Image 1 (cartoon, rainbow, N blue to C red):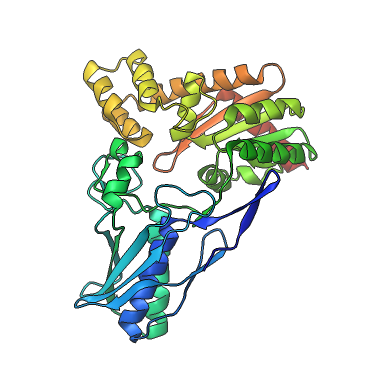
Image 2: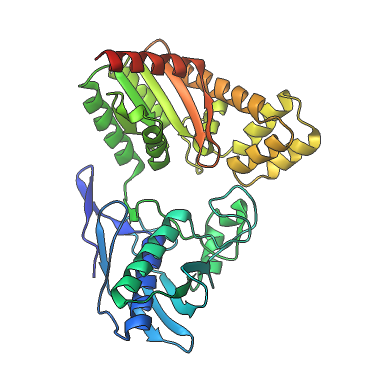
Length: 382
C-alpha cells in the first residue's frame, strides 16, 4: 500500500517515504507477533518519531526453526535513494537473556572505526532505529503477555553490494548498508525547493523581530532545546546544508543578530569557508582538523591519524589523547566565526556555536555569548 503523505516542492506535490529504520521496526514487530501469537498480521502499523503513521503489508512472513521472519519493502517516495525498493528483514527468536537484543545480519554493515553513531564492532543500526525497533517489539510483547527476552536480527538482502554506492566504505562501515533515520520519514525535496522553503521560513521569522537562530536540522534543534535556547522568544529556522544561502537571506530580511548553532560534523566546514555543507559539495572535515591541530603543535603522527579519522568525533577523541582538543576546537570555532561574519558583512552581528552529540558543547564564539546574554536579559526583563 502506498504511503500517501505529500509535501509541496514549487508547483509540484512530492510523495514522502519512510526510512530503513522504520522498515526494520515494522518488520521486527511483524515477526514478533507471528512468533508470540501464532497469528500472521495482514498489515503492520507504526507511529514514527515525526508523528506520522506508516502502514504496510508484510512480505515473507513465516515461522522458522528458531523463530519468525518478516520483511518490509523500503519506500523512499519521490526521493528514492540506493535503498529504495529493497527488503528490510527482521528475524526474531526467543532468548534466555532479558530484554530486546538487536543485531545486524546479512547486508547490514559493521562499524570498524570509532566516532560513529554505534561503537566499533556493532551493527550499523543507529540509535533512533534501535529505539524504534525495541519499542515496536516491546509493544507486541505486552499485547501477547510475554515477559521473556527476544533476539532481533535485521538484514538487508543485497545490502553488501548496494553499500558500495554509499559513503559507508569511506566512513568505516563495512559489509553492508546502515539502518538510519531520525524522524522515520523521508521527505523529498529538490535543492532549490529546500532553499525556497528556508527563504519562506526566514521571511516569516522576520515578522516577529530582528533576531534569528539558524541550525541545520534535528540535532541542532535538540541541542537548542536541551540548553534552553529555543525558549528565548527568538525564532529558529532549520537551514539544512545551505548555510550561505540562509545567511544571505537573513541579511536581505534585515536581521540584526543571528546565531548559527550546529553539529561540528557540518559546521567545521565553515572554518574553511565552505557554505554548502553537503558532502557532495565538499568534505574537508579531517583536513581542517589536521591543519588547525598542526598550528596548535600536533605531531606529524597525530596529523596522520586525524587525516584517517572517520568522523569529527573520532578527530576529537584523537586530540583529547594528546590534550589538544581545547586549543584546536577554539581555533576552529574562531575560524568558523570569521567566515560567517565575513558572509554576513555589515548586515548583522553573527555568532557561532559548535556541538557534538558525544561531547556536547564544543565551541561558543565570544560574539555568540554576547548575543545570547543580550537575548536572555531582554527575555527576563520582558
